[in-house]
Length: 501
Image 1 (tube, rainbow, N blue to C red):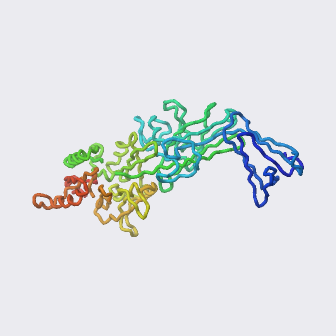
Image 2 (image 1 turned 90 degrees about the vertical axis):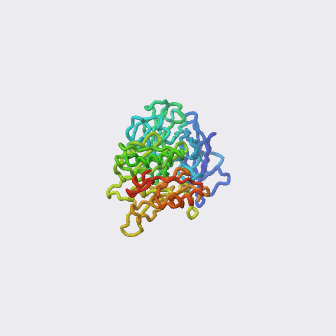
Image 3 (image 1 turned 90 degrees about the horizontal axis):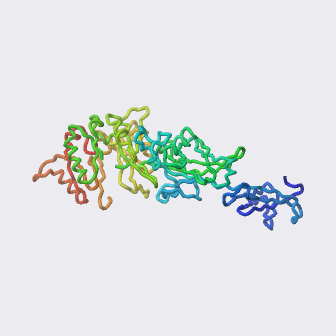
């Protein structure tokens, strides 16, 4: 208690304790000696320690109270302190390793000079016996799965006696709990050494700290991509709690993981035999691997371009491709999930909840441009191109759930192009991009080799005049034109090479 007659006070700390006095300049005048402060509601004292204590209550703060006589104290108070070093750290510097961060852990910025950890959505399937996507598992099915997660380290230095009477609690907000999963690593190399402690069914976790333990490792996985109602940012915090007082460190480790789209797979079918051989020759010349979708998997559905697209997710410590399955859902419906999803190859889809699927929802209507700069804004991964109807009331568009998903990734702002005037209405019916040395459809581009539908134009001097014209335009750019007969396999069915790859 403050002694009777006390008017001022003086405060000091032992070694390792810093004392700061904060006051309202409108109400309080700073004392000449900067030591005897008035006992006034406008004066606050802030105490901090610069290191963890070696023993319980090994730090102290002394407060002396004075009346009108400044050389004789009316009484003294002593505050005993125990310093604890509690910090939750992730790879905020994007170096691939977790380092102790002194910066603001509540911010996240885009770009090469950006800041904040990147979290991968754990959408592949690493376990050989697993049937679903890894993010659906609450138990680790493969140690390789840890590489798909972001490392996180909890520092918890201090006297063991402090942690006997206090507990460390890791928390995830309710809004983020269905979007992130956290596994605690307790040493060892068996699957049982990794336990999921936060996620859709666990909002908090009382950390099991062993005597003398100063660092505890965690692994964090993303459970969902950014979407219309989710910016892609999630936060975690840790608190040091006793029975009455909660003293917490809210180190919001903000993670994000967008899905950029990139651009071969063909299906095998009886009438596709000649086309398949020509595609195989093209892939061989371009030194590319050709994956053939057999009849038992394509079930007579040759329009593989309409069924899926490819993208990738990337963090400083790991990256892998992801197949984006369209809501088209015809006879190739199960091929992306059953045959492409696997170790380090992810899977994502968006289903149309109520309205039926339209022709514009096929992914022949989804493409991506080369890198481009628009009005001073750079798009190093290009921009997503979507075919649409002419802007009018009742005009047809790609499903909103797919457009919202693509827009939410933020790195390749979508552009809608008027394509509804075409027979099928897909954007790939009237454009393709080819590489050129100066960086300035319906074909497939493998490096500098272009697979182009054979036009069967008039024969002049022994050569197809349409082929010669195309060669004259493209081959000076350092490209090689290879014309492929797809007349029976795709053209007569209202498609071309691009539709089948």
